[in-house]
Figure 1 (cartoon, rainbow, N blue to C red):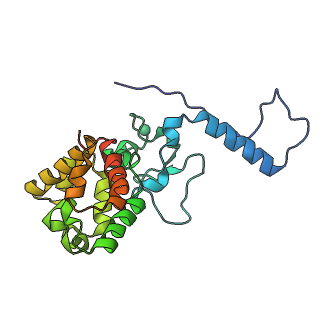
Figure 2: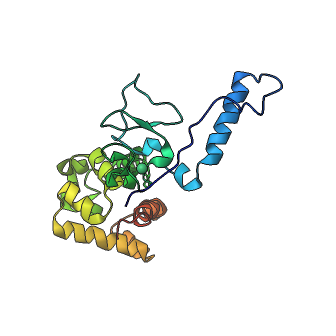
Amino acid sequence: MVRVRVRVAFSPQPPQSLPLPLPLPVPVLLVVAAAAVCAAIPLQVMAIDLSRLHGHISAKRGDACHPYEPFKCPGDGNCISIQYLCDGAPDCPDGYDEDSRLCTAAKRPPVEETGSFLKSLLASHGPNYLEKLFGSKARDALKPLGGVDKVAIALSESQTIEDFGAALHLMRSDLEHLRSVFMAVENGDLGMLKSLGIKDSELGDVKFFLEKLVNTGFLD
Ligand SMILES: [Ca+2]
């Protein structure tokens, strides 16, 4: 199906028919322009935070895109507007703006936030604590799985728990254990988390963390 989309280019010039009586100072013009752009972007699109897209955005200085088209297609370097990310139609030549890992990461908490949370649990309880969630390969501060950052990226980018298990080469038994933990949380059964040794003071944070994944399709 060919999708036709009309694009309106942003013009910093006021329309000829509506001349401004006095030239506005540049900062005022910028605020007005930013407000106009924000008003034109639907709320759903505003939820996409480029800082969540770990590893999907070039970090090189000097090749940044214009603020109104902040996403750089990795293939050809074209810059596209943020409302064209994950909107169902390819805008980068290779369709990267619709990449399923990128679009999953756009819905999840930032990788850095997930990594910090996992590290805080390890710091409080010791390097083997996350075996309770992710199974025996999660010992030694997740080193057998590639480290905390790799696990955080997999949690961010894996659309489903099956994708997560494949990304980290989890054993089937460990994956099914993890699924049972998620299902318990989805069903409001905090007894499961308590039985894993998670302290009452941490239950809220762990539940919130797991629910974020469930609510973005992890168990689908
Ligand atoms: Ca698109």
